[in-house]
Structure formats: C-alpha cells, structure tokens
Length: 195
Image 1: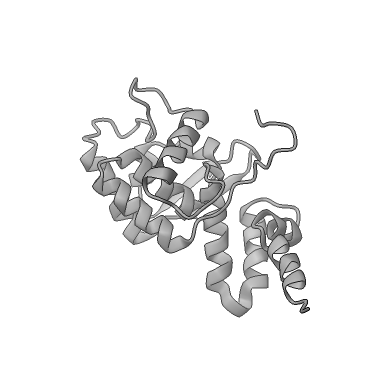
Image 2: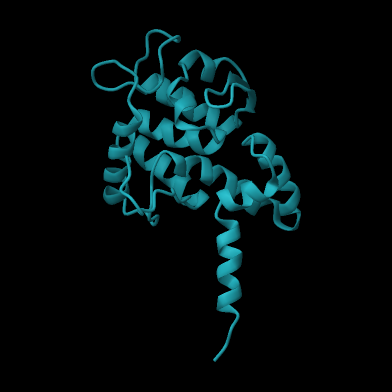
C-alpha cells in the first residue's frame, strides 16, 4: 500500500540500459531476474502475467499466447530470436528439469510475489547504479512502450495506436499519458519560455 499523496508511478529505463542490465544480471548468475527483466521489457506484460509464465510457454516456439489476468483478453506475442536464445541460456543455467515449471520461483520453490520482486528491484537499482527514479515491475512494461514509440520516429502516432491496442487502453491518449509522453510534452511548453 502506498502512502497518501505519494507518487507510485513507475518510470521506464532506457532500452540500452535495460539490455545491459539483462546481461549483467545473467553474468552475475541472477538468471531468473535476468529473464524477468528481459521478458517484461520484450513482451510488455504486467507482472501478474509474467509471474504465471512457464518454461514450456517460453521455449515452445517463436510465439507466446496467453490470456491476460487483468483484462481476460488473449495476447499473442512474437518472441525476438536473440532473446529466445537468452531464454534458453537461462533455462540451461538453472538446470530446469520440468518444462511445465513456472519461470519465476523464490528459494522455497514458490512463484515469487510481486512485493518480493519489487524489493529485489530496489536492490538491483542500487547495485547496478541504474538511472531511473521509480523502478518497479511496471517499469518493464513502460520500457517496452517507450522503445516502440521511440523506434517509430515520425510514425510515433501510429505506434501509439498499436500500443493502445496491445495495452488494451481505451485510446492512444491514455497510452500517451501512461508512457509519460503527455507530461514530457507539457514540460516542453514551460521549457520554451525565455526570460
């Protein structure tokens, strides 16, 4: 639960910083968190859907299909080929014996809680000196969205329409606000004033 009048909005991390973090976590033998950060950022899923992923889903082919817990809607995701190799590397490094096992388990063998993930992300932010103010499980979904918009360049409005559909938002304006683009645009108005 958050404190009254506190800011609980998650911030995105720059794409290159996210990819670097995935590699650093893997190199430091934090395989599950390397995979979690990667899956969250490459798939744009909410943490409730990330926590329910199994190895079989991730290793089953070039696409992932699931029913989102929050919306009840079907989501089809194409798995990036290079990231698919990373999934396989994590699977092998963890010596997984059963492909139907959940990917994100705690030390006791249970699916890790969102609270535990967020606690570990705070430690990761400090340990790896990440340049992000509010880093949480929702940061990955926003990182995905910002990468899609930034990669679209002049076609960013079309990217927002597509993201609105992927995120199941009611309009691209909601997606714009969700990604912090609206606040950034409004701040630019003030920055344009000279004295």
